[in-house]
Amino acid sequence: MIQSNSVTIIGAGLAGAEAAWQVASAGLKVNLYEMRPVLRTPAHSTSDFAELVCSNSFGALGSDRASGLLKEELRQLNSFVIRTADKYSIPAGGALAVDRSEFSRKITEELSLNPLINVQRSELKRLPSSDQITIISSGPLTSKDLAKDLTNFTGVDECHFFDAASPIIKGDTIDFSLAFKASRYEKGDADYINCPMNKEEYLSFREALIHAEQAEVKGFEKETATFFEGCLPIEELARRGEDTMRYGPLKPIGLWDPRWGDLYNRENRLSKRAYAVVQLRQEDKAGRLWNLVGFQTNLKWGEQKRIFQMIPGLKNAEFVRLGVMHRNTFLNSPELLEPTLQFKKRSNLLAAGQITGTEGYAAAVGGGWLAGTNAALLAMKCEPISLPLETMIGSLSHFISDLHLTHKLSGKKSFQPMPPNFGLMPELSNRIPNKKERYGAYRDRALEKLHATIVKDKSLSQIIKFSNNKKSTQRIN
Image (cartoon, rainbow, N blue to C red; front, side, top):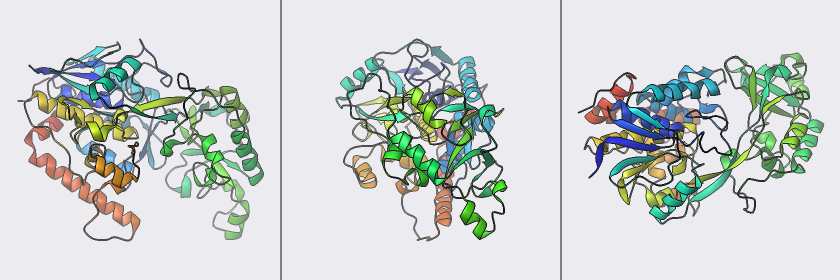
């Protein structure tokens, strides 16, 4: 018999935190398991919930961008995690970046104080019994024992790729006689620190990266590294070609130091423009810490210090955290999951977050919202929902659960992680050549479809209403 008065959630990352809030908002008890600090991972630094391991950015703010639309949909759905991210946001140009430590601290505090959420700081080595509604949101760093039990349950081998985190440095150790603050194309406030390179400096830097000594990925030294293309280590980008970094994280276009003279003088602009620019994004609200944008790395720590201090303005930089690489595990979701994020083999077992093969913080939150909402609906004897394909959340959940669709849209035979993008959504009824206008049309259609779904589904409307009231412990009937 299904224990419908409670839901078990494995993992308190972004997806697990969101799922726990949504279930508790429906007036249901939650048993939330988080193995840290009892069992640590190669990538986490704290024991807080929803710790941001790599960047502190949730991606674009604008709703005419794929990541921005996803966040706007989550705001419409009263996402607890996105609401907290908005509250603890820090300047980052056109992106939603947060004070990493304050954001995670607040998430941990809110969930720990919720009377319906029973936090268990222990490793869950096996899936709960089949009569228990359960959400697996253990993330890409799922413990070895649980991953093995999950593989035994599904009968399908796990997938994996390697991911890395960027270094963080102290802001007061940056030399501003060489570095300058600006946002690209002078849009908004000067939220980024920029370190310009001339051609000679850039080529020397690239050469050092190519020949630098790599660190071993613990426990997986003998494997051939398979990287996620959307988050390549900086040294891998350097190896791919002389200009690869200059068309990626080190692109100089749109960045100008007023000390170089008049930006609008074409001759001056062409002669003085930097050959490449390294950007740093603010980490904390006080602006004491800054991370190197796009500098995921697997270099040995001594090599990181030596080479990154070659960057103009960072000669005396002090590193608070150095980059690390870790193995990310994810499910072969198209063979295992429904668009509702339920397992095909067991309807009261759901999965959410990066373990499902979605990529990016906002996508993990979206998966947590959908899995948490559906777990609550199952417990209330209601039909679970799948969101429309025209929404970004819906297009992602359909992509990871449809083998034919994943092959068609990704162009790959094997399932690979997928970030939010407009290519996942059904084409518009009329062709719009202008890209900005086209993306705006995708946004308008998505939000209209989402609103119509919320209005139509009374159970969903109630859950959304209650999720906005953090003190609610009333069971939704």
